[in-house]
Amino acid sequence: MPDLDSGHYFLTTLAPIRDSAAGEHTHTSYTQAARIALAKMPPALQSPATQKSGKNSPFARNNRTHFARMFVLNDAVYNGRVGKRFRGDPVNPQHVDRLNTSYVVFCADIDAITEDGAPLPEELSRTEHKEVRAAYARTLWNTMEAELRAVYCNCEGFDGVQSADDFALYLDKCHVETTMPFHDYYLNLPDFHHLPLRRLIALVAVPLLFALLGLLLRLIGVMDMPLLPISTFWAFIGGLLAAVLMAAAAVWYVCQNGKKPLPPAEYDDLPSVLKALYLQQKFADFAVDTQGADPEELHAQFGAFLAAHQPANKTAPTQLPGTIAAPKP
Picture 1: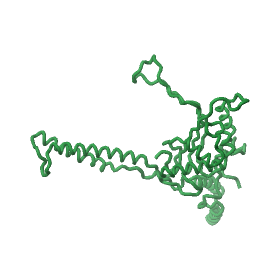
Picture 2 (picture 1 turned 180 degrees about the horizontal axis):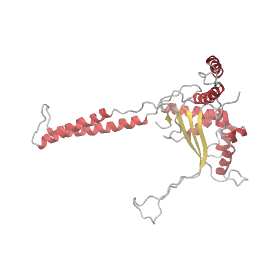
Picture 3 (picture 1 turned 90 degrees about the horizontal axis):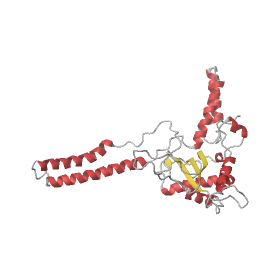
Picture 4 (picture 1 turned 60 degrees about the vertical axis):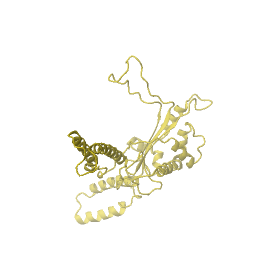
C-alpha cells in the first residue's frame, strides 16, 4: 500500500496557494508571501554554520520526524518535446502539462505511529493510515503552530483552521499518495517478497500442457482423452481457459505481493536512530580516551561508560533531533 514502508510513513501534501495579492495594501503575491515565510523558517543544526545560529528547525520539536521538506511548487517541470520515434509533426507544438496554481508542498518521513514510544507497524489499514496522518498533524500544530500559520495562511481553505484537529483535517485534504520512500536504515536487508516461482509456473504450465495434449490428440484423430471421460476438443478448450485463469491469478498474486510494505527494522524508530548516533560519538570518544589503559582500568571505565550513557535506554541520554552532534557534557 502507498505511503507506508519499513514502519515509516512517507507523507506528501500539496496545498493550493491563493491567487492575487497577499493583502489589500500590498503588492506581494500569496506565492511570494509563502516563500518568505519558508525562508524565515530555520533549518536544522546540520552544519557548523547553522550550529552557530543556535536556532533549530521547528520540526525538531517532535520525536517522529526523520526528514521534512517544505517548498513552493510553481508549475510542473517541462521535460522537453517527445522524440521523433513518436507520432507527430515536429513543427506543431505538443501539449505541455501545467498546474492550475502554485502549491505549498510538504514531504515528511515519519514514524508511522499515533503515540510516542509505540512500536512501528508492519501494515496499516486505510483507517489507521488516516489516524497516523491526523496524529502527526496534531503533533506539528502543537509544537510549531506559529510557523505553520505563517506558511499556510497563504493557501486556499486555511481560513477556518483554528485547532490541531482542524489542521489535521486540512492536511488530510491536501494529502497525495506516494510510493517513493526517502530513507533506508536497514542494517541487514530482510528476507522479503520471495515469490514461489516454481508453484506459480506449475499452476500455469499444468493446464496449458493438458490443453496442448488435447489439441495434439485431436489433430492425429483421437476423439477422447485417454483415461478421462472427456473429448479431446473440450480438454483443449478447458485446459486453455484454466491456463488463462491461472496466469491471471499468478499476475494478481505477484502484484499484491509487490504492494506489501517492508517490515520495520529493529532500530528504525527515531528515538533509536538518535540514540545510535549519540552512542556512536560517545563510544568513539571513549575509545580514544582509553588508549593504552590496562585491562582492569579499561573494564572499570567501560562499566562507568555503560552507567553514564545507558545504551538500553532510548529516551535519555541521547542526541537531540535536528542536530549532527551530541550535546557536550
